[in-house]
Image (cartoon, rainbow, N blue to C red; front, side):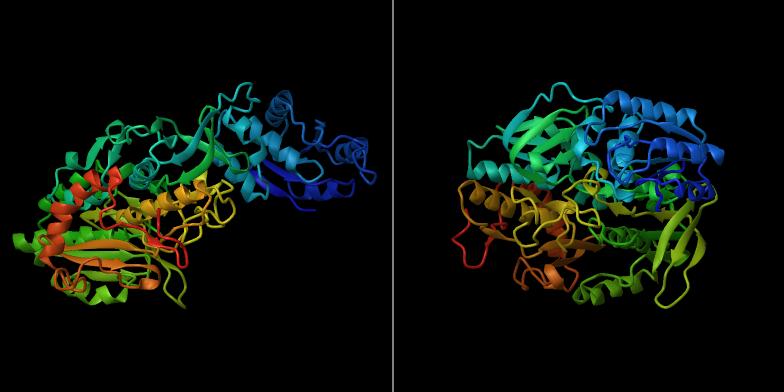
Length: 561
């Protein structure tokens, strides 16, 4: 028989036979819970038979029968109580293990996050989507869903969500739209690289969320707990239910700081910083200014991450400051990259390598940060070089800029919308979900193989808006996404290598080469980054003004809406 582990204290299994009890004891279990009523199947042994064998072997056993599909709230409480009373580890069984897993899920609804419960059950092979509302409701059956209903619901009010809402409103003014997001502040995250170099004031990268929600769009200030796509429903924390005709999913990406041992405890002190957080980017500039001699380490985790060039940008701009201050010869710059190349599109690498040489930076590929000892100023990296045994190396630092590991948000990874890797599963051209045809996604959370940048979202938002509008009007998808993304690589103060590319690394320059040659560092690209892009972001992109972002049409279809 197969034991499916949920926690250290509980595993579940399908129907147990008297012969299995010895195996259960040999596996180290000390108690058994039976959740299957007697007489449910013709070939099913009775509980008394299992009980007698368990008692002979010194195992405790309890009978908590559950009718299939009818788990009651009180039964979940009884299960939780039994888990505290019985010696562990415990094996619970029913016909398939589903009822036992459901009881465990509901019994922990008050003390575990819903996403963690769903993920634990999913890892054991059980889908708890059918009881997700009860899990979100603390294990209790909701008595009043309090449904709200909208034509379009948008999950996430970041760059993608607000831009999509604005683009939809510009196309269909009377559309009833709701945006769901718990945040009070909206950030212009591309500006944090410049904050970390002393170019932007951090306050210029933040505005209140309420000031940016488009006029006529409802803002539901709440966190999403789960999705019920078969019911066209989004479940919020507290078990409120929001219904939709069409759904757009764009909650961004999760920065998994806790994945690196010791990192959270030392961020913002001991020389450890990151431009990936609003409150830490100023510390990057403080450290760069204060460092006159020593070692500066810059890290990049495994892909995918948002703005894959950002870890390099921090290195280049810090190096440029030390160069200008005349202290660069005294500083050992180490770039620790979990990947095997400096940049994924080879056409931009030569220009970047010139700056690697200028700042005398050492490139360390296949080095992934796994732990940090802040007080000792030591970092440990796991090295996975091709055809080599995995090893670890430790390095000391005086300053370290960390790019954190990144994943899809927990409530996305455990949802029916996710692919096997946890990202929202979309068609890479139309950005429509592959399974649910009234759902679209954009931004960092979806699985199209493009760079996760704000520039990508700027193109994706009007494409999704055009395709949602076409669907409302009964037509086929109108907008086609070519994978466009942009990464302004700030190689020195005043110059940028402007990388613009699409699917497969295809170069997709926006402007003629005589204005900006993306293969070279240019002052024009810096001017665009410093002076043009922030007002374009606040005043055009988030307002639905699709300046240089009109959707390409799907081949063979009518012009875009």
